[in-house]
Image 1 (spheres, one colour):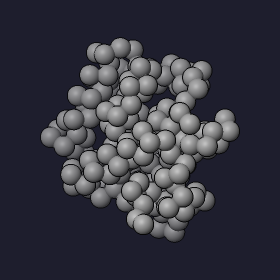
Image 2 (tube, one colour):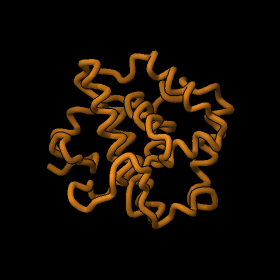
Image 3 (cartoon, rainbow, N blue to C red):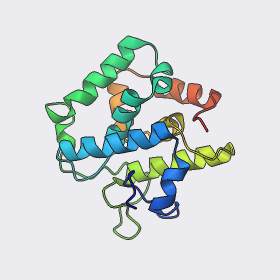
Image 4 (cartoon, rainbow, N blue to C red):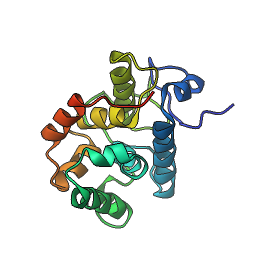
Length: 176
């Protein structure tokens, strides 16, 4: 059976095992991010694709922001990605510096920063003894990389990322 999430990290579980470590919501987010990257003509899923999926798929993610106007602003930037904002990213590899860009151990179809975020989400879930990583786990991992495209979008939309990280650390992310 082919992995629906299209992700496999270096020390992470095998692709067929990853789906068992994600909530249904997070698996949907990952699938949506992959479709969005393909539709936009991007070679890799990056952190902005993941952020877009999180905002679209999970009400709990939208709830950690400062209300509807902030979420609408975020979605506005993300939707403009293929027609304006974000065009500077088209055809480039997202390398936030969180992990070195190397061919060996790279995750096919994923930017290094997106792969690191997924690993971070799994680590966060495991640290709280959860069996599955959830959407809030991934959002927290995205916010942990200050040089990622997702954080660039958050900052452009006037999101205080330090405050957001604090909220996420105070929450019980994910759903088992």
